[in-house]
Image 1 (cartoon, rainbow, N blue to C red):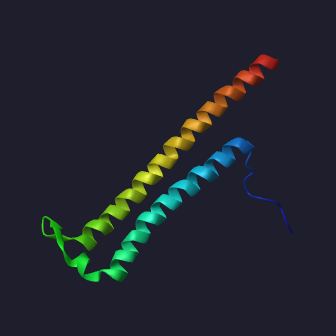
Image 2 (cartoon, one colour; image 1 turned 180 degrees about the vertical axis):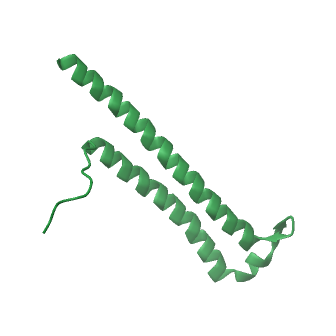
Length: 100
């Protein structure tokens, strides 16, 4: 028995497309940064042993940086999508208010 989805989404197509593009853009940015990390580990593994600062090697600094970048990109995505939602919400309320 199919009762349909638990939640129905009523987001407009423009907002959905914006969220998809923003998410993919940030995903590819992060993938590129992570790809460089994997490439350095594969091609130049001895480079990861070099001490960067405070006695921490490049592998640790880069790994912590990857985590911080993921958090920053997540916050950026949330900010961008919230800003777009508000913009579309105010424009749709103006449109609906003007037609009544």
